[in-house]
Image 1 (cartoon, one colour):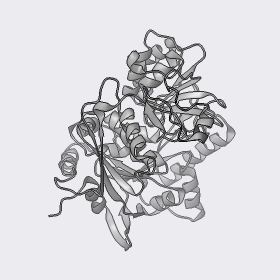
Image 2 (tube, helix red, strand yellow; image 1 turned 30 degrees about the horizontal axis):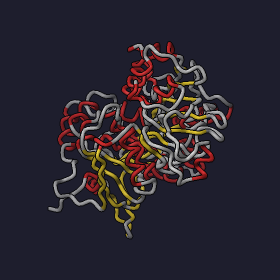
Image 3 (cartoon, one colour; image 1 turned 90 degrees about the horizontal axis):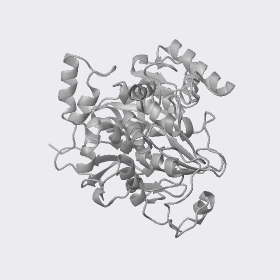
Image 4 (tube, helix red, strand yellow; image 1 turned 60 degrees about the vertical axis):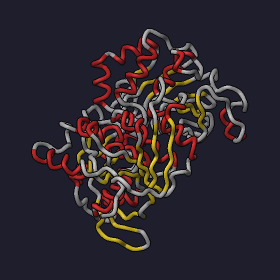
Length: 455
């Protein structure tokens, strides 16, 4: 029998029909929607008089255009409220379960999917959002789709897809002090570039990956799209099963036992061949920080700013050959589908406890879901942040995407735990530096980009 990769096993199990030239029709097990891309697909369904084939296999949440201002219960503008209401009404007509604002289950789709146990090992999972690769952390085959594909999934519960090549990335060795999952994946993007994963499904492996808890694995897979790969995956293990056991949408009773037996077969076989392999020595990593306008523009906190991208330097207001540490910051954002889970908030709180945000810095913490917000408040984390001078916000995408009024001012410099530092991503002329929650928290306190290991 030919040795198979994790990717090949799941893909082959979902094959409905081979359409030729590497294009295949796959069954979709799980489908996530949110109020930004969902209504567009639902409107197309209505215009074409199409019926949702399997509404029970789709769930939705409010995240992209909702206001995260304390106490907010909707959008921050009439157009946003209109999208929210359209999503509610169309989902109700179709019989699709929506986790609405202020409900347990509401939050960023890539946070609540795993949190609810809707994301499962061995499943195909799609969503109209590029960071759907996040769900691969549980051993799912997950990627983002466009509006026309979203409509196709709603109507047929299938997807037409070109079969990608396979890549394995090994993260070897034990990372040093204060090195997080965010530092690991940023280091990989810095090494192979934002086009390094184009056309590949990536499996992350190695000692440092196995040592990560589920939240860290979700962070690693979240940034797969930032190295050009639509799909990022980690083989499920005992940590995965313990994380899922008892969650709302996870199998129960005898079905759990059956599912577990299947999940244990999903790891890549010994001798399985990948089209490409890379490795990262985690023992050599320093905390990472981006300096330019692409996630590949990243260096260790002890590094100096390169001069190979003059346009990026001009936009960011930085000079080549100078240390990145010591760069003054104006804003700090801790949140997004990359780093807004409870361990992320704990890591940031550990840095700010008993300290104060620098006087010139405006700092926010935005939990990734309603449940995370409740759990953090039960631990008193919100008080730690509030006493330090942070704003404690409602759950949502917030300043990561800037569709909801949560913007960085023009030419203001923000250290952000999100996934993209593109030109204008956090607002017109906003300057974004990507980093881990601990690094962002340290910058808020110091008022400048600084080495969290000094804390």
